[in-house]
Image: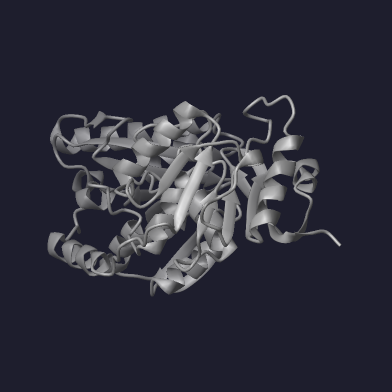
Length: 372
């Protein structure tokens, strides 16, 4: 298998999969190869991994020279056994190749191969449904190396099922989980997010603290439409993981945000995730806010100007640093600007390069004490 993830968190994914008992791991580009697996392992990764985006089952690896070779290689896969009559399919493509104009064109070539083969065998072509396909196919081409895979996740795994609505620039759930792992967050912490937005960091922290699988709210995965899917084994894996869940202790996770509508959105998502009673969110300005409960860990994804056009963010970052210092807490701030990070005014203990929605960012870890 190949388990995909965001840029820069491959080593974190190796750690997480190891904790899940997965064997034979090798880090790759934006993902991890799994050399030793069975279907129970595949179900477990899809259901429990907080960092994985897709779990791919390669069906054919080959040298790809042009569109013609891509078409004929795609025709060598037994698509009729994978796509049942009346089932739909879609192709997700990531292509960097001199002879293939773009990813959409390459996906079209594979689509033609699939449809032509099934039409020859059944007399009719399957339909494409890019929004909600029964079978999701993944194509990856880099230079002359190509892989066609069955996507056992279907909908990307970062879509947990709790995001009812979003703010203007919501953080992806897998990135929030990675940030929390980098901070060393555990259920013993009192976590505070002073720029909580739609609540992604708060909810991901609650899922970690309650040992709730990341896929707990989801109903469908791509593996359910694979010919080898075993319903009884899947239910066994899911139930075994669900039995580890514990309640969320009150007053351990809370947040604020400056926007009234943003707070409303956050509360909607908290309700969808089942944490509306345990997690308190209020409208407030972090620059004059004093927590009634002293946090041990402050995690924030404040605006940093490239996507949300803020005229002057320096006072916000200075206020964030003052807040961390007043609470004597550990702090973790995601930003894309060294000058904004310096405005926090606290010694940076560590920093990690991350990517947030196509924006190169880095996470800075600071302690609640002034620079010497």
